[in-house]
Length: 213
Image (cartoon, rainbow, N blue to C red; front, side, top):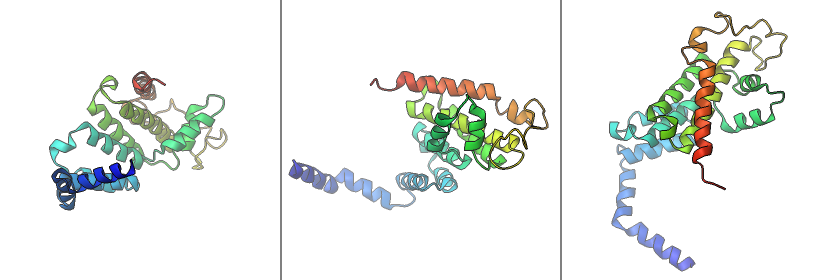
């Protein structure tokens, strides 16, 4: 069996189609080479570099759902979303304090982080409605919405800057006060209820479309 695998590998390496692949990657200005570079940058958490590289792809390739998903992933990464941290935070939260958990997970959030979450959301929405997106795309949207809410709450509600809502130093923050939670964040961004609605739609599609156990 090992000999068969080695033979198949050898044939693949010398085949014209495989040669074209390596040749294309060696041309740094080709779409394949740029896309390969963007994926490497994503793997290295080089979010801005990946966004820039994706922007140099041909318009046709940029418009594909796969590339748009990569772009959304880069925006989500630059927003500060760490899927593993979000999963751990939400799973370990007690008393149903979801918003406090999200605030504590999206540490040291800035307006730039919030804007990147919005860009990730916009990019995924442009692919299509939840029913038209893949399981992975809807799962990414779920994390984007959670991260976006956390970034907004961390930036707005954590008055003491310690990445926690402690009900002592932050007790004066009022979500119903426009000065504490501007309309841009509470409504036009869109609102938290809409965030939850989008998250539920995406999450529902994940569970509906995933392969049965």
